[in-house]
Amino acid sequence: MKKNLFITLHLIIVFVSGVFAQERFIPGFKLGIATTQVDGDTYKGYKKAGFIGGVTLTTKINEKWSSQFEIFYIQKGSRHNGNPDENDYSFFLMRLNYIEVPILFQYTQKKFTFDLGPGFAYLISAKEWNELGVMNGNQAFYNYEINGNLGLNYTIIKNLSVSWRFSYSLLPIRQFISGESYWFNPGQKNNLLSFTLTYKLARAKSE
Image (cartoon, rainbow, N blue to C red; front, side, top):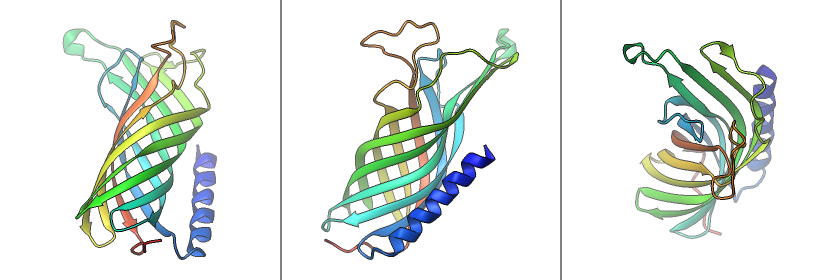
């Protein structure tokens, strides 16, 4: 895990260093949390919290439209805590750690910015637990994820904004454990809501 975080940090440093050499691109920093679930794992609810941290790169096209490229580390997965009062002593935890790269189109109206676009993620680690301990032998996760993103950003003060984003896997992250995947229900998918702060180092200029 420490090795993966070091690699992620190194990539972010290299990315930001390169961006500073390109004046027409405006870099920023992104930090927040994700509330996540995995559709198809039999559990419901955004009960798994995860960390988000990385960088953004914005190019302003005109006064209303811009494009934004991001690269960040994100923790996804699923969680279920049993309820002893209902004789439920089960426990489940799925931890999925990704490097993710969304490519977004943005529309700004006063202090609000709407964004929409695909995301591409690489799985760097995955692990599952139940009430008996670490689970082994489950269906393997795919190394890559493709997702769709829909978000809303609000500018608090100059260059600082708070963001809400919904993200959903467009393709499954793995087959169902039982192997009962089929064409219109192909397997498990990440489903998450994220809440982040983004600080941009300058205001982007129109192309």
